[in-house]
Length: 151
Image (cartoon, rainbow, N blue to C red; front, side):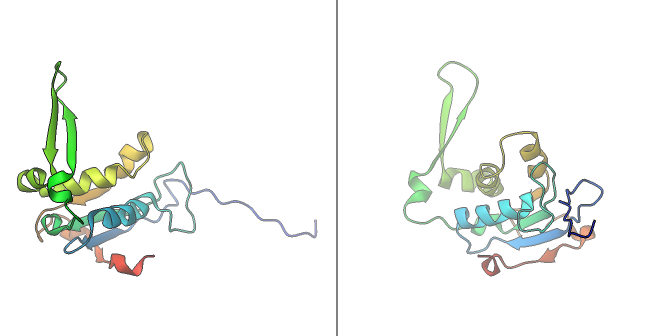
């Protein structure tokens, strides 16, 4: 056959090239940071992206307590949870959550931008968020990236 033939290459666990990336959240807006990190976790910027495979990178986020929210969201944005008992709906503002656990604000916003299935749960395990500058992933030698370079 003398015609050109193109094969669609589908990535799998063996052929995926995963990297460790370090993101500094200081001065970043929460939603913009979360959407860019969700794309990195999903691997959608890679040429060998396959929708049903975890082909994204491992991301470490530091300085989660220095995140920004625009407008009056520190007081008006509420997070809802349920205890499981009747009348057990509990509300927390962003200020209260920042005081209790700053990393949870970033984790919740990123998790909401990932797929709601088993793949999304697997992708979420590739995310590590730390409140301060110290992190436990020095052995993996993560490369620091600037999220402002991504459009």
